[in-house]
Image (cartoon, rainbow, N blue to C red; front, side, top):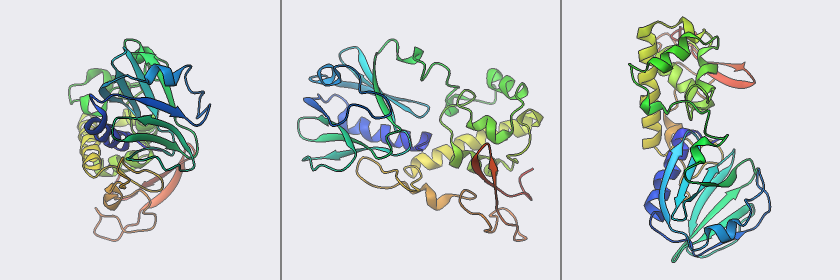
Length: 273
């Protein structure tokens, strides 16, 4: 599933391409992706100009000049692509026509969705209302965030994965962040001292910034608007590296893989405490 860096990569690319551009028409090839296509979606987007594009966690919000916005979640396999001409590909669900190009939403597994909201109400929607703070907005002085940590019975990995605690993190980046912090995914997060919490906050930003700079991580399906993959895969230190040498340890300790809450976790038992 695309996590914060992949969604931010898409947002940056869309911002360069469709801001201040008018949607001349919209074609819909399916009645339902994860949810039903919004009522009169074609009519409500036709002739509308894109004003701004924001990201909240793993969601994209495309603001139109009609005081409405398109809320997008890419699900597991959702991708946007730009094309000069329309050549149909399987799983193309929505095609936005602009003056000199097309923006196509393709989603093989159909776990993504698009919804329409009034621009003033979107952040109060059930999708966004309970999401935790954006990682880049958390500082060493974030009392509310630290109180969440002190009052949580979750493990460090489970806490970071919970979108109500912090927005946008998923399985790949949680493992990488904890490795960078030298924090075990198995300990209770409330047992971290202030020094370790501040290291964790710093590591969150370091890993996410690096991933965004590399265009995200492409393991299977993720591609940017231009069809390019994300190259942060080449910088992964633990994720997918079971039984390989730890980059931190000098005595050839191996990365291990365990299952936590049904998800794979990769870490080094020696240097992550």
